[in-house]
Amino acid sequence: MGSIMKLYYEWEIQVLVLLSFMLQMFLFFAGSLRRRTINSFLRFFTWIAYLGADLVAVYTLGYLSRHEDATTGLSFFWAPFLLIHLGGQDTITALAMEDNKLWLRHLLTLFMQVVLALYVFWKSIDKHGVELLVSDVFVFAAGIIKYGERVWSLKCGSFETLEGSTGQQYKQQVPGEVAEDPYSHIVCAVLHRMPRVFRIFTARSGDSGNVIQETPSNWVKRMRLELGMMYDDLYTKSCVLRTRSGIILRCISQVSVLVALVLFLTSDKRRYNRADIAITWSLFVGCFLLEVCAMFILIMSPWSWAWLKMRRCSMLAKLSWFLLCSGIGWPERKPYLNSIGQYNFHRWLDAGSDQPRSYGRRAMTTVIKSLVSLVGVKEDKMLFWMSRLLDTEHVEADKDTMECVVKGITDFDAEINRDPRHWPKLGGIVQELQDIREDFGGKVALVHFITEAHLRKYPLHPPSDMETDTGTSCIVLVEVCRKLSNYMAYLLVTHPSMLPLNDSALYTLEKMAHLFPHLIDEQQDSEGFFNIEPSMETLQELVDIWTKLLIYAATKSRPELHAAHLARGGELITFAWLFLSHNFLGDSEVIKVQLTNANQRGTIAYVFGNPAPR
Image (cartoon, rainbow, N blue to C red):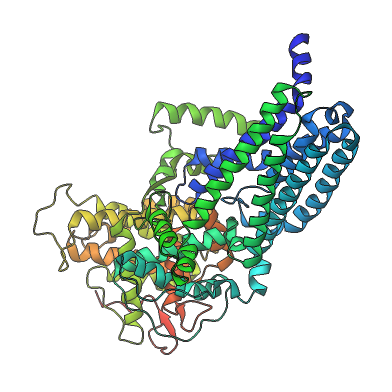
């Protein structure tokens, strides 16, 4: 054991420097995947790496400043590389909006770590050759610039900065009609509308203008692209690297590293340890590889493509477009928001039963009950937490669901100032929703239970004549309805802050668990909620009800919450909220949205009018 510890102490600085470098490599590639995946393991390890990277780099700089022997070998040369590591990667500057708020703390850390690195350099001046010292100075310059870029990016991504910004960074010349690819028209349209998207996310009053006419399919592509580009501006260095100052600083840092490499190559390294030389080469090579990859990330940006197109750089524009459309860029198929959360209230009811659904669930329930009893947590809270952890899942945000939401919002916009819609099949349910403001969560749970009971009546292989006028099959509508129902339940359980709730999710579920048996008894008559005959018309009305509930919830949500959820892969409610804002619908827009009022008309739109008499 003693020999192992001795070996560790001898190679501690080398291990720490390599660990810092490997964490940066992981963060670069994990950060580029974060926009397109909600994989829990990837997000967990990204979180660990993000927190650990700064910790390791700061500790290593402190180690170099404390140990005299660290300045006699090549170890002193690694101090500015640690500044580069502290500067982070282009693909991830913040894990959450809260990280952006800490930009002043990072500015102070930048000052302290630069002073510490200068101290290490000062102690090494009389111990090394001039070429090596000058090489270190150039790496120093690159490190300060990289860390400065990170602080700048964090500041640009903070909500306070966004609220005080004029949005000038989005006012860029964009090419008009581009004939080379139909997708390019969508990209150009999105770039033209990004100033509007910026104002939406900063909760500024809607500007005047006309609603653009697009097919639901194209709207889905546009919304996904807009959300993805907003994610880049909030959580990566994209916003900084679109500025002239950012590009100049990036060029200076890259040239500095190149000059440092040449000087290191020509310097006398014979008296240094071979392992230290190999580590230094690894740091240089790794730095160049990451810079090259970052350059490709920058080139594949829609902004870069538009900039190159406007300056008639044909070859570079074609390269940019090729990368943009590739699987690692902004593909036409799902560049962002690829999945939607799902939760079923019946799973929570099963969690409290004596017969869990599986042996694994039974074992985990027993273990968790034993653990929480030690800390005095109530059993109902434990079951709720366990159900939320184990029963939440994500499914594909498929074309049918996304287009259904778009069509529902478009139809709702067209219904404004018209006579209230009639609900011939589900008028009773809509009547129940008239007082939804008093308990939004309870009504969501009620419709969720009704939906689950009703969808079980549809056969797995329905007859071919069960289609809507538009050709939508019964199976598609059932899946869309189930996904929307489970998604609203998912929001209630996992993200209640995004819904206009009066009570907690746990209280709502407990209340519904007590009311549900009585509700079933009350609605067992032929006209009850649970005895509605299955038909395509009923199914379509049920989908429309869920779409309208989503519309109301989206218009009552806050922009800062949507900005925060972009870091987690985005939410369907954010998609709906942004599309509603594009149609000038919402609390910060021209037309305010309420739930129901059959008599009042004007600038307030109501999701539910008076239903038709049953």
